[in-house]
Length: 281
Ligand SMILES: C[S@@+](CC[C@H](N)C(=O)[O-])C[C@H]1O[C@@H](n2cnc3c(N)ncnc32)[C@H](O)[C@@H]1O
Image 1 (cartoon, rainbow, N blue to C red):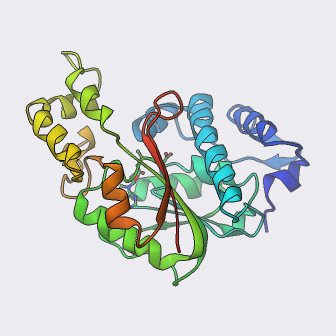
Image 2: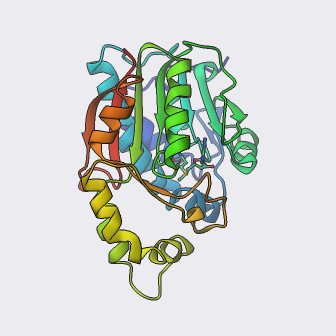
């Protein structure tokens, strides 16, 4: 059993964990502990738009926010917290949560086999499972105390987002805290401002939809779930992956029965996407 980072390295505060994670980019062994290795920076960028220290700093911000909310909602993180990272990518969030949570209580799922091979192959703390885009999850009912999904509900079409919220509710125990992100209204401004020629395949994919943005503003202001079938700019199936812009009212009206929404934070000084915090009744 691999204990949590705080116990393993006798850390005093969370900042030391971020420092240690950043050191691990270039130091494979720290204080005799073999650290999880990192995918090539290009692969990290392809998955999350940044790499190494920058990607870890972004993850640390969200992790700290989630940790504070978990405490405020009376579910403080501890070594045996059962945690799920839904859409785990290359595993930067299980690395963050490993600060407080023992490795055998950390779980990650993703639809891309490549990401799971990366997580397992690089020695990322946690158990990792490949799932189908249409579900279900390979877990029993009422298992998790904490679920995070960073930059995942910003990509799912309405039908799948509704399905996954119900499925996450199934595996969450009562009181489970959920923290996820979505695109806020200002994402539509961002699409209109994409310069020509676009810088990346993702920007190019989005720019093709400039014409529908006026209708999307209207839909958003009527509290409708908005979805742009961009395929992530990487040729993914647009039936299961694109860009989703979800109003706060939609979150509350459609999903409060699964997770009561405590915060919908649309603040670009803190987070690039909107952050939503909920709790299973
Ligand atoms: C932008 S990446 C974010 C990765 C990770 N959450 C992070 O921030 O480091 C989105 C991830 O969600 C995964 N994904 C897409 N659709 C999914 C689904 N239906 N269920 C679970 N994961 C999904 C993708 O394969 C990808 O790894």
